[in-house]
Each structure stands twice: as C-alpha cells, then as structure tokens.
Image 1: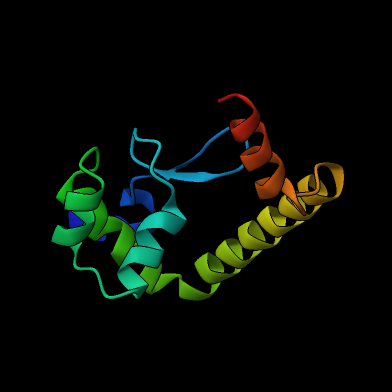
Image 2: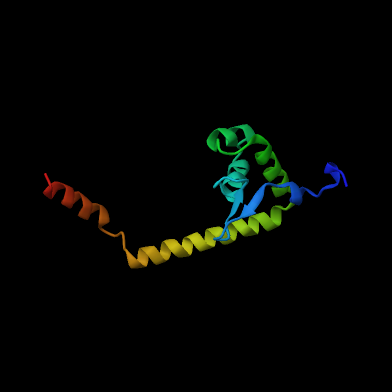
Length: 112
C-alpha cells in the first residue's frame, strides 16, 4: 500500500488527549481552534502565524480531514461548546459575577 492509498484520516495529525479534547500533532492547539480559524476565512498560512507551534503541513492535513468529515467535526465542536457553556453556567452559579466590578473597584479605592 502506497502513501496515496492511505486514507486521509490515518494521515491527519489529530490526537485525543486524556480529557477527550482533540489536539493537532504534538501541540496543545485544539482541532476546533484550527477549524474555527479556517471557517472564519483564515488561510493555512495565517493560521500558522497565529499558532506557530503547528506545522503548515499539519494545518493542511487537518483542513483536509475537516472537509472530508465536516459533519462529525462540526458535531464534536458543538458538543465542546455545549460543555463549555455548562461549565460557565456552573461557575456563574457558584461564583456570581453580579456586582463584582464594583466590589473590585471599591477594594482598589480602599487600598490607596
């Protein structure tokens, strides 16, 4: 079997970390970070400038994987966003931010 016969998903530099987050290559850059940048109109070269720990070939491979598996990747991203929103809501319930700015400003004023 030659390189061109290898399915793209086997060549995409995507790994799942212990928390269930998909990362690109050996970096901490998330799959959704690259896909979101791409969907916002960033070229692979611009993505590379934003995330210099990536390699250009990795970015191209991730985009190719995304284009071939758009529904699955979009569902993964939606799930990650849902989880993040749940965490934000729990934090807000536990540590309400209402009036926080005023409290911090008052504390700063009293320290002067």
